[in-house]
Amino acid sequence: MFEEIFGYGEIYMPLFPLIGFFIIKKNIPRKEYPLAWFAFTNFVVFTTAEIMAYSGNNLIVYHFYYAYELIFITWYFSKNLFKKFSPVFYIISGAFVLVWLINIITWEPFNTFPITSGVIEKAVIIFLCMYLLLQLAKSERIMYFQRLPEFWIVSGFLIASIIEIFAIGSYKYFDQIINDPSGVTAWLIDIAG
Image 1: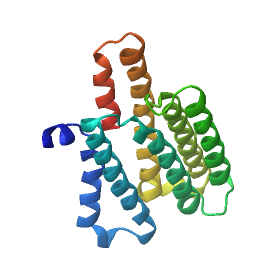
Image 2 (image 1 turned 45 degrees about the vertical axis):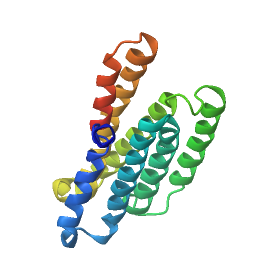
Image 3 (image 1 turned 90 degrees about the horizontal axis):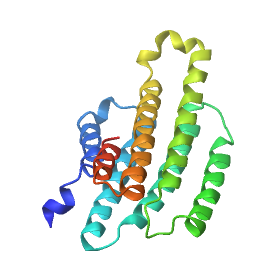
Image 4 (image 1 turned 90 degrees about the vertical axis):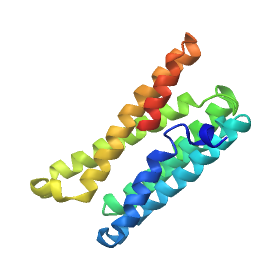
């Protein structure tokens, strides 16, 4: 059972940054601590998903994870990176939860993988990251952007979301449309993102 649970990389990807956080904790500004919480919750969620996969259906976890991830990232961006109050968090989170519920009720129930919710969530994160990078480019802080933690945080979320949006689409195509075993490879790429 241990090998089945820890055989996929989705448990390791949040675990490594969490370990790194605790090693260099004294050098990290306090406003970045929610990212450690995000890594910890990802570790717990994906460990739970692997345990549930071993004993049955774990797809319900991914439905809730995509909603959690978007709400957390929009909260983190609006609180720490926008530098002023923005209703973007409430608008994006509320609209996504509405689409998420409609998706569960009509297209993808809890016993299927939430591809539509995943793609929409990743697309919203990509647009948020692009918007924040555009705001950075318009400011004078662009002159020293390499030293800004928010640049690297936003870039990390941007790159991971781009990889995951392609991996989720590939997974749907290979695994669910043409029933090809390459869907597992696409899923492994999504885990790495």
